[in-house]
Length: 172
Image (cartoon, rainbow, N blue to C red):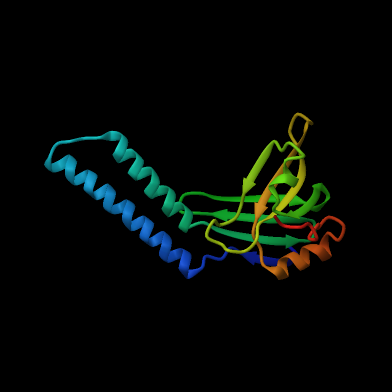
């Protein structure tokens, strides 16, 4: 495995504190619902399930980590959170273009699959990889990946794929 460049997702301390407050609030709300169920015998399944769902969602968001790797023939993105670990590979030959995130630009093409492989708590700009993928039955699908990487990684991408990085697009 010939690694050309690597980048990791970053979670700032400010975002960790904000998510910590949100998790604490949801945990208190869940504790109040459980206390009301035990003491007053008032059982509201919707409130309990919503509290558990949002608590799991927030914990999943804060534990998400992404590892981007440029290799000789492909871009690899490893995604990991509290429950799931998954790897995505995009061969360079199937990449159509890499753009700074622009909703208007990306609506021109209809994408069959969209993967959001970046931390919501990372404050770097979002980039979009547009690529094609051949399915088992021979059909070609247009797909896109949203990711956040450091400037050094983007520079290495420009060197690896000189005609496919469209960094001069104006951001809205």
